[in-house]
Image (cartoon, rainbow over all chains, first blue to last red; front, side, top):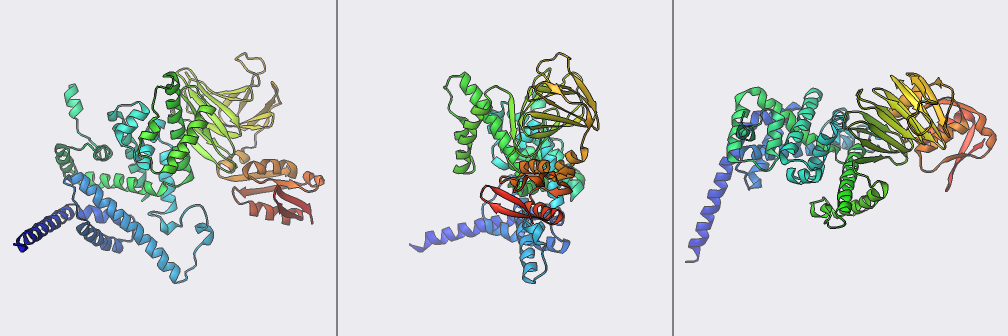
Length: 185
Length: 338
């Protein structure tokens, strides 16, 4: 009677794996087009299709699922963004291997070289300036949430605002940055 | 719209939806509404992509000096607010800073330092302090959308009230781009003198005992003494500059707008400046000064535009242009005739 429970467990696992596969497949069928368009703004068009596929496998292997569609999409796009970043780094290494001349002065400066970043220096500085130009409170909310990982209630307490106001200010900041990104990339 | 309806109101734009999703309080009902919104119009998903992209790209900015500087300011001013209210409550408070999930222990340690500094720097409420170190620059946007560009080694305090926008330059140099507000003058205090503007752009620089005010746009009123009396007030307009020291103002002279525009673009500009004066200026941007090995060299004049942070290029230009040699010593780089 030793084998029965282990078989059951195996069935459980495969049922779980199956449901995970279905879930990922469904998620992709709904967001694939959008994801491809998104990635094509970060890497070459041909590479974007490849990265969509890579993201798909990455999610299949990942396991745990988020049952809210909006959260699942956020995870999907975040994963894809990380893969795009790796992709750009790989391309840079590849180029270095081929002894293509790199502008060492550019690389030697404070920041990473242009291809090691997710986007060109110009795009990034446009976003940076847009953050700097946000109204003071809106900027504070954005900075604390984005770079300090503080939750809305934590920020609300810290700034003596309501959580609702924090959410509104986040939306204001995102509205502005979304507009800037739309124009830039 | 009733209050209840307003509370239930669903987001109405990509940014609002994204902010709601990130709130961590998304209900299944909201999720359905999100799904519906995304599918309602092809443009909705596209603008949502823009926001997602902005959010993800912002990660690349995390370690940049400008972002780090803004975060420092945020932490400084909120620590200050906390310190103020803690003071009022006579030590009854537990410091919030340690209850929050700061990224690392190092951040917490830095915060302790900032805390101490903040209490030391300013204990009055609603004062924001912005500072740069040697060689650093930073632009801050204030609540009314006025901006301050801080040059190297500069410290300013900002205090906004309903009737007045008051800035104190403790040291250094800054350019103020003032948002128009006729009901709330913008006052810059430096070394006991005041420059008042309504909506304009101007540079204020403290060097030693002297304050120089240069106007790039609009008009400002400069009072070389404390208080509001009009005695000794000088009005200067775009392209003009005035200096004051010990309560007295100089004659109006032409502003060196090229120099100011230069530093705003990380360039140090010298147009026919005596080497001694040029070095005083250049040394503001570097930690180890460049000094003259022979005082007679100070009278030579130089011209040029130099990129901040590229000291080697500046020294090369001096060596070649003025036939000097630059020797690094522990206390400074010494210039000698060749």
